[in-house]
Amino acid sequence: MSRYRNIFCAIWSDDKFPFLSDDAQLVWFHLYTNEFTNAVGIYKAPIEGLAADKRWPLERYRKGFGECSEKGLVEYDERFHVIAFPRFFDWNKPSNPNVLSSWLPAWQAVPRCNLKTNQQQRLAVAAKGWGEGFEKVAERFGETLPPTFGEPSPKQEQEQEQEQDIKDPPEPPADPKPKKRRPAKRCPADFEVTDDMCAWASEQCPGIDVEHETAKFRDHEFASAKTDWAATWRNWMRKATPTRSPTRLGMARPAPADAFAKTDEELARDQKIVSRW
Image 1 (tube, rainbow, N blue to C red):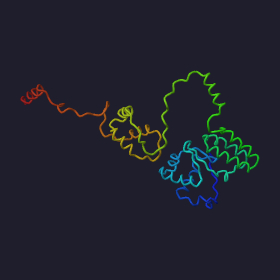
Image 2: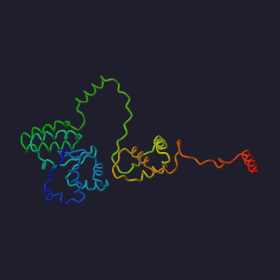
Image 3: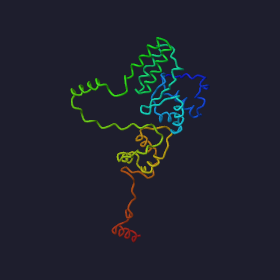
Image 4: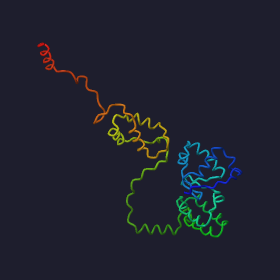
């Protein structure tokens, strides 16, 4: 990630940008300058994460983003969460071929997708105009892309079948890893409090009304986006105010009504003491 971006003053004379809404213009500047960006004009970042980074409601950010996309100022791959600027190389020429070569690590970090192929083709066209040295370096960007994104060739299929024949039988598939959640400020609707979590709360946070605090937790909107909701729930319980007095083994129970009643033998002894006086 480079620390600076080139923005030309002529952007306000562009045939598209000045006619965007204020929100769309601000979204474009955020897309162009946020901390996910790099020097090659294409990077990976989900819309939800960008909205959280801008501290805007998702719908507001998505609306401005859609306006930028309709005007062709940005492109977005929903599947790979890749964002690209089609005219990036028109305004961001590297100062020399060595600088262009230094962009390769950022380029390689971008997932392989059609947007990356399109951006590589734009770079090749731009480098041809920059000079021979740039053109040779730009060829290395194309080497990081697969030849096609379609079905494997017959030769590839044959090689895969041969490799499969000489391998041992496959082991049973491992348990799937839990799906990583996207950052959000509100508790997801499918978040569940398990029995183990309730047992943990009874031991670590005695006196807390777990059901009541969980309801408050679900309704709360946090200042920053969260991904680990189980950990966030535990922190909420730690900070909650106990509603009942705790005991070592759990919640204190009221003493039975006859816990302090005296037996007949004790009452008779008390009467003898009183009669002496």
